[in-house]
Image (cartoon, rainbow, N blue to C red; front, side, top):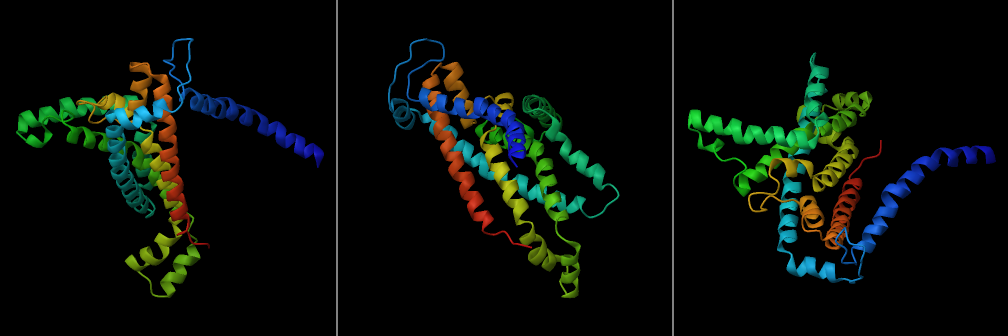
Amino acid sequence: MKKSKKIFWLFLAPSGISFLLVVIIPMFLGIYYSFTDWNGISEKINFVGFTNYIKIFTKDPGFRDAFIFTVKYVVVEVIIVNVAGFLLALLVTKKLRVSNFLKSTFFLPNLVGGLLLGFIWQFIFTKGFESIADNLGWAFFDGWLSTPQTGFWGLIIVCSWQSIGYMMLIYVAGLQSIPQDVWEAGSIDGATGFKKFRYITLPLIVPAITIGIFMNISGAFKVFDQNLALTNGGPHNSTQMLTLNLYNTAYTYNELGVAQAKAIIFLVIVGIITFTQLYFTKKKEVEM
């Protein structure tokens, strides 16, 4: 018994030490720096108490605007990605001959890095759409990424396109975990079409919905690469998300103490939202 415990701790040690060095210690250092005026370069660090936090809430409209924009983005993106991912999962689990090909095709955008994806779509929006507008006279395709509205929908299109395939796989796993005898019992009881979906599929797939929404919310709040590459917060910071606002505060304005305070606020907000979502969706799960 003692030997097995030693082996257990031996195997756990590398990941535990890595987690401590990469996550726990930096987090506590970040909390400490959020109470200082450190600019990220100087060796002189002064303790300023809650000054950074007060400044963020009273004298930083950019953070407030970035927060509102990020929340709007998260709500729209989570709905689109999860609904589209679920519909695609229903499609590829229909035992079609091309199911595996469709799974690979839908998942492919997830393998492309965020920065590269952002630059590719920036070219499509600015050059491709502009060409369509010039040649066909369709005003809808004119001036994408040059207004807050088109910048917002540009981000939604790019990030949804990248994430839908990943969510599809989560829902495919959820659908395939439903036992065959449950379907057969439903058929014997006369359930068909929408009734099967309403009373069998939907309740039994709630665990996959819980995981999908949780991962999607936390991921959507942390979007940075696509925002930087696609709009860089423009025009006039109207499409700046919280992560880009943090980055600019730290590395453009050299206010690392303020940036750390924003990061702590950001961590608390994302934590509250995601754990609230987990609490409510977990209550809907059905035991089989």
